[in-house]
Image 1 (cartoon, one colour):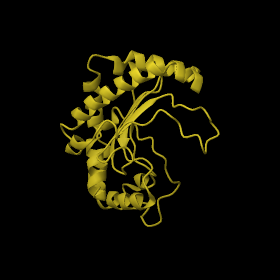
Image 2 (cartoon, one colour):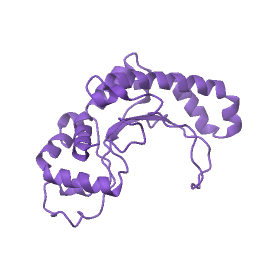
Image 3 (cartoon, one colour):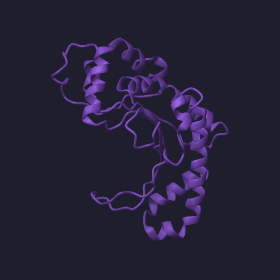
Length: 216
């Protein structure tokens, strides 16, 4: 996996089509390594999350090419490799598991990111209706030891909910994506897959709550 990190470091310094095309063989090798890694991670996740047993690597991995149509940043390539593993693939609006490899900014995450207004409304209602259960999940010390709830929030509790609810702060969330920043060396260790799966397993209760609540 050191080849992945080294390639991404060089890409960050040479983010142009000329350099990328001249290093296409290196990229294809890096891409294959990442695909093999994610395939093993999916297999590990499927041992406790049966929804992952029908998930493919292809539908989980994001393209390295950036969509620059509406961006001021016209650099053509992402400087990270990422995969979101959930039933139905990376575009499915479900709770899932995310792996992000980037020099000096590697992380593991999951949950639900950028839900539609309808999904977010339903999820907030389920959190309010099942406050104790939800808090037992997101405040579990095993989770908070590794993950931080770095979520974008509203300034006020949505008007349909009381401001004194025990989950009032959580009802402000626009997304539910705990983040665990990891040293990039974790992906080069001999037990990289095992470490990744064990860390992502901590998100299983949250994903189960999300997907059961929304019948996704």
